[in-house]
Length: 467
Image (cartoon, rainbow, N blue to C red; front, side, top):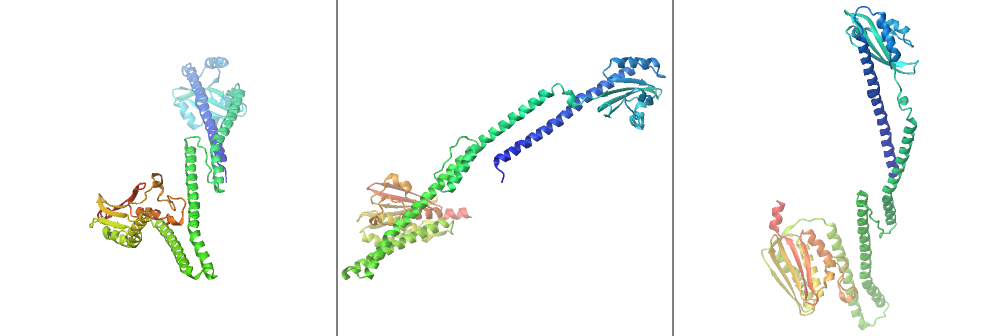
């Protein structure tokens, strides 16, 4: 697998190759356009000016001599001949007459048009450009002016500066290579840090973070990595805390059940205390049963993405929840009060709504003093049913309120058996209310009481949206 640095190098190399090819093509284009074309136009102009010396009729010796004298001082080679076949005696290289002036070229010359040619000449070891200017009289080709010039090569044109150009090109390539190398190192440095950090996280170091040094895409990637690392660390800490809490919650009842069961089996407990110890074993078994039921309920609510909502008479559902809690309230000499609008119809699941209310009422019963009351009220508020559960209990300090829906969270960190509860009740409430499409919040005053407020969508509005 290729590293990203190698890919960048290959990309830069590709750009350099493309640049060189482009510059080569551009140089050849400019050579043809600026040098060859200019030379050709200059030769045509010279030939046409010399042709003005021809006055018609036969090509005279005087014209040929005048052209020869011009040839001594011109930068191009020019000859005047009566018969094109005589060119071989004038020019210092072999000329194929049939190639030079074929049927097509002869038609052009008879029409008074200038003919240009370009080809390689071995004697000069370069391209030679030729211009043929006709000397026509009464539609007869009486002679021609032949001009030729050996074109200089591109290297020859730059011969004087070839050392400077080569040195400059070499220095430029070295500077480019150094700049690319430094650029790749700068780009790869934060990526290498990310790679090392990811490797450490894979080894279990979830506290690993990378310093954000830029605001570009790599900086954003680093920021996202840190957020991911924080989320993973939080999840890992939550999982460890969850397992520790489950272990702690189960350890005490299991130790009681195991210890008293062995003592009873071995006859170490007096007969008059056996009933008491059996009742204690039963109570601890009940605690384990409630804990496992709560964990199962929480797991189900997390996995259940949605359920079929049905119309529920809210007052009836609340009334049944209070009836189920009545025995527990009587044990603490507490009273339960319900005030609900009988016309409220919510969209939800009856059993899950009862589970929500039972958990809330159970919390109020657990953390309220004897001979106090719990008030449950329900009324309509816009498109929601507003449900409040208010107690006269010990209350909750403000710093604990944001954490109450966390698993196993308890205001009292001692987690004594007297505290009761598993710390999962409000986590289940939070999940079930979310599944209903509702919301909730808690307000509390220390040593005064706590009020939990729920908002559950009404059936009429849910039905209209569904339609």
